[in-house]
Amino acid sequence: MDWRAEIVKGVLIHQRLAELDTQGIWKYPLPEVAASEDEIVATEQKLGYRLDQGYRQFLRHANGWKSFYQDVDILGTMGLMGGAVMDAAMVQLDAIDPGSFADNVGVEATGVLPIAASTLQSDMFLLGLPWSNAPGAVFWVAGYLIERFPDFRDFYLSMLDYNRRQIAKFEGGWPAS
Image (cartoon, rainbow, N blue to C red; front, side):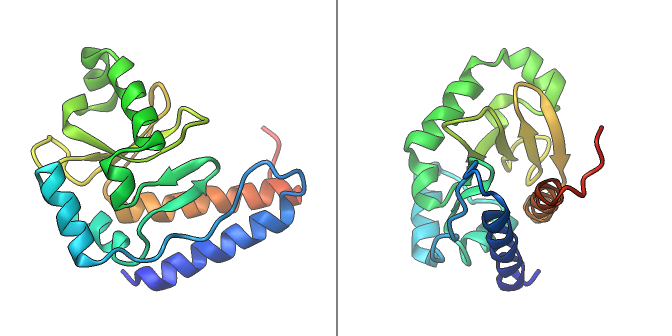
């Protein structure tokens, strides 16, 4: 995947959203500067395992992205180590009954890593860890499973589509449900 091209698409989508969001519902910052291989390796050493290849490649081009989807930040290497967004995700994850989480999401809560979350809304995106029964899969959870993506690439591209749908809503072209 050409991450540079896909990140540029994301930036263009965010710019259009910013133009249309006249009420200032969300913020639309640019992605963070790429992480170095040393930063990624240091993060992996602190976590105790190697990050999924797709997410790793993304970090090599954008070391996180605040408000990538509404108020949800994609975590960069620093965010994976802790901070307000990771803390909020961990509080949510810890509050879920492990049995119901596994039944609903299809993976044990101990087998996922928050990679995108918010301090303002319950949406979080969890990456299946290498030892889980779903390594590399990304789970969109907001109290329950909303969607499962086979990998980080599909998660990223799908979220661009969700942002495009928001553009259509702002433009008035989204069908009423």
